[in-house]
Each structure stands twice: as C-alpha cells, then as structure tokens.
Image 1 (cartoon, rainbow, N blue to C red):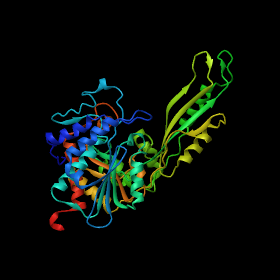
Image 2: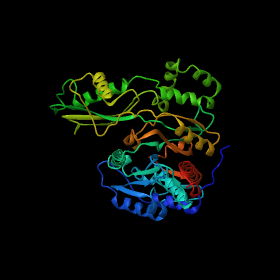
Image 3: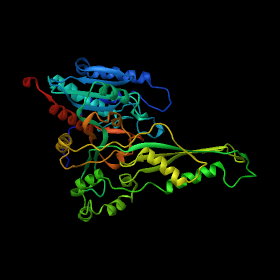
Image 4: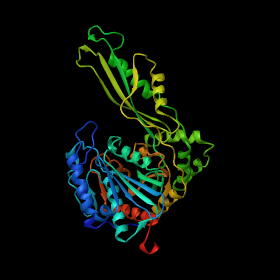
Length: 450
C-alpha cells in the first residue's frame, strides 16, 4: 500500500484554488492576460509574506525570479514552475467551471491544478515553512516561475535564464515539470516514478505549394491540394528510423523489477538485444515515442471553392525529435521522402533541439530517495519528456536536470492535463508540498547550525 500523505487542510487548498481562479491563459498571438497575471501576483505576495520580504525578486514581464541567498558561495538549485495555462476548449464538458477553483473533500479543481500552478505554490508553501522555521540555504536557491511556458517561454524562462547566465550561475540541480508517478500502467505491476533527465526536441515543418489555379473543369495532373496531400502522406508513411538510445536502455533496466517475469527475461538481453526490444516498443504510440522522432501532421489548408482550382495549399507537420536527430535532420528527411521540388519545406515558428541527457549522480539519487520515502512501493526510473518545457532555456546552468513532480496519477488522469476536468487531489498536493519541504531541508540549515 502507498504511504498516504494526509490531504492538505482547507486553508492550504484554498490558496491553490484562489490561484486557479486567475485565468492566466497563454495563446499564440492572443491578447496577454495582464490583469489576471497581476491578480495572481498580488495573491502570491499576500499568501507568502515571508518569501516576498526575505527573498530578492526580479520580474521579467509577468515571470518571477526569486533569489534566496545562501550562507556559502555557489548555487544549490534552480526550481522551475510556470504560472500560465492553456485555453479551455469546451467549458460545458467540465464538472466545475475551469476557472472557478472549486475545492471539495477530495480535489482542487481547475485549469492549472496539475499543469503547473500547483508546483509553483507547493514550492512557495515549502519556502514559507522553511523561513518560518528560521532555515537558510547553505548555497543560493533560485525559484523561477515563467509566465509563457505554454507558448515556448521565450519572454519568461528565456529572459530569466539569460540573467542567470550573465550572473555566472551554475547550480547542482535544475528541477522542473515533466515526469510523475503513474499507477495502473501495464505491464508495470508497481507505480512508476519517472524522473525525466532530458527532453525531446520540437519542430513544426510547413509544407507549401503554389499553383496557377483556374477552373475545376480543366485540372492539371495534380492540383495544389493533391500535391500537398501526397507530400503529407509520404512524410507520414516514411517516419524517421527507430533507435534505442542509452537513456531508454537505462530506463528499461531500472523498470525490470516492476515487470512480469516473461518481460523481465526479455529485457535481460539489453543492450545486446536492443533491436528486438525497439520493435516491441514501436507497437504502441505511447512507447514508440521513446524510440523514434515522431511525425504528426496536424494542419492542412487549401482551396476556396469546390469549382476553383486552388492557387495555394499548405500543411503543418509536428515532429518531436529524439536525441541523436536534429532539426536540420528533420528538414532533410522531409525533402528526401517528399521528392517533389514544387513542395517547399520550411520551419514554422519556434523549434528546439533535443536536450543533452543529464547524468544520474548524487542529486538524482536525492530526488529518487525523497520520492521513495513518499511512495515506498514506487519504482524509480529515468526517461525523457516527450514535450517541451521551460527547462530547455536553462541548458548548461545546472549539473543535474530532473523533470519530475511526485504526484501519483492513474492513466486517465493524464487526459485531464490540457484536457477536461483538470484537478489535483488534496493528497497529491500534500505530497507535492512535502516533497519540496524535504528537498529544502536538504538544501538549508536550521538557525542552530549557523
């Protein structure tokens, strides 16, 4: 059985709920939610007076960079979170309105309950407790809360990371969102705590065709729409190759004790029998993403009327890039498999390369040990974040990177992230605060130690 953390009290739950009532929505090209961010900032300063009186605070737009000065030189940790949320697609499908911040006996409901306001507030709850106890870090700790992570983080995390680089900061630990503890995920027979040590890259490729147009009664061999459809089909039908990387080998070897005996035996051939394991992982979309740069056509546009030949057609294809591939590899691959000089292949929007893989040294072990204390039956492993987080802006600023939050979720809970009925249990929120409290206990010292 899980060592159940007691759920948070009403006052603590209400602080999170109040933050969820601030509709700090980020949209590409949309109007910034300035008033909502200002309201959230005022709440944070009222809820956590010690943190806001004793830590240095620098603002970058609506992003907030806190510096908790240490008693010794150097930097212990950079703790990341983000304050923005994604838009809501259909509010009528929610049990409670997404920005109502409803608290019941079991859950705190609202957009951002998991992604990612709970992490920001849990960090501040733990810092406030440490300050009230008179604790102070041995080496400096930074808290970096971005305001635009959901739209690539350039104005928030990008600027805060640049400030830290200019100040010559180099930390032992960078901690951000990414992995969680999943239960009920076959074939694992125990909860799996995935402490991610890197993330895949990101690129959206724009395929475009321009034609002369004309009347649909006299079409050429292939219209602009037909040409772009063929290009999309070729890209989707010819994905980048499967590849088992060292970090996924490490992940699987750590997971072996949680698998049934036949699978444990199959994994016993790693890394020598990696090709067979790779083919097995490729059978399901959830695990195929671990062993290939994924290809996802997401948008296609073209034409204005049924009897008019289109003069223009385009498609967007999103790639999540595995370590060992690059953005330029993706572009070259698209041109190679499309084999059509009339289809232009260009990058659309912001892209990022796959991150380096962080070493699993003593700092990783600390995060793993705290996790096992909170959920003793969990098996801890490594992994890579399939999406993009603010961590990529902080590359090179820390020795060890961990993307992880110790919340225990079932597979269906993952659908609530960016989906309908996002919520966090009181028990999980208590666990999240306790995780940060234990981490800060390791990084700080009580008054008697000074």
